[in-house]
Amino acid sequence: MLHRGYKFRLYATDEQAAVFGQFAGVCRLVYNLALEQRRDWWWQAKANTGYSISYASQCRELTKLRAEFDWIAAVSVTCQEQALRDLDKAYSNFFAGRSGYPTPRKRGLNDAFRFKGRECPWRKLNAKWAVVKLPKIGDVKFRLTRDIPGAIKNVTVTLDALGWHVVFSTEVERAAAPNFGPAVGIDRGVVHTVALSDGRFMDMPRERLNVLDRRARKQARKLAKCKRGSSRRNTAKKLLASTKAKMARVRLHWNHERTAEIARTHGVVVLEALKARNMTASAAGTADAPGRNVRQKAGLNRAILNNAWYQFEEFLAYKLAERGGELRKVNPAFTSQACSCCGTIDKASRESQATFKCGHCGHTANADTNAARNILMAGTQPALRTSVGEPLKRKPMAAAYPPL
Image (tube, rainbow, N blue to C red):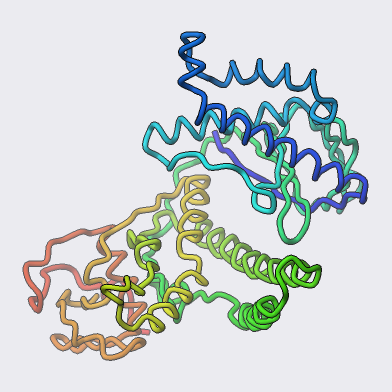
């Protein structure tokens, strides 16, 4: 069973957009009231009733609340129940140790509401346009960029810096056939976003990202000069958020295309088990123990985040699973210092960022390609290295990959 989400841009009228804001605001209010009730009054509720506050008890409270306030009753009850369900799941994740304690939802960050799939039928108008019927809102047009396969389980309407969007969460029954495609190792880097063990490189569209980055920096400087609370500051803030969202969309589109290409042509993909969050931690330190090379580390962190390593890994994992492939992860230790031909580990062999020349056997290759080949071997023919500088007894990669 495959679970997929399909996101489309909504083209709502001004009246519909205002109703969207009302729905999101009421759902946010219900969530925050339920959070306050669970956080601050659970002990009193248990003392009076003998039971803890739960999703079912809060649904009963919601029924009374809707009967008392017409503006809350004007919003679909499904959306409000889904907000309570989200809170109940957040508490379950917290008590299971999967996440932190639930926090209140805020306007501008949590502008979304969700319906059940059976309540929101959609139909095509033509090859490029369609409409979805939302309860208590009506038909809303959206740009149909692709088909929506499977059974629709949920329909979410969400707001970001680029406008209102609709997300169809679907469930597709599909048995993936075994994938006997070739294996490939992938090294993720800063200069080259992705280096494959077969010698290819895949790079983010840096020209487009650099243009947007310069625009964002200019808009950020303009925002810093605006007076807080002014209309000009609100306008500048929206422009900056829109530019940042466009940058994120460029990275999203590139990762979708490249991971789909790799998943179609390979059965096994080997990656390094990188922890991007730890790698991009600030080097500022504290007032008592200040860090070193803070500016340089900040620049490296930006470069790593701009390449969206974790997003690439997430997309590749589910696309491979969908096609019957396999994603393997290996220890990243010494992959950039080992020779892919003889296995010798020597830091001095990495002559520069781009060049690797083995001091033991003389093998020369692009440093990223050499690392990708080591990653492939670690995931497909693992072996033990005894010590640094000692050649590894194994079949050399030169037999599998001819010199470039």
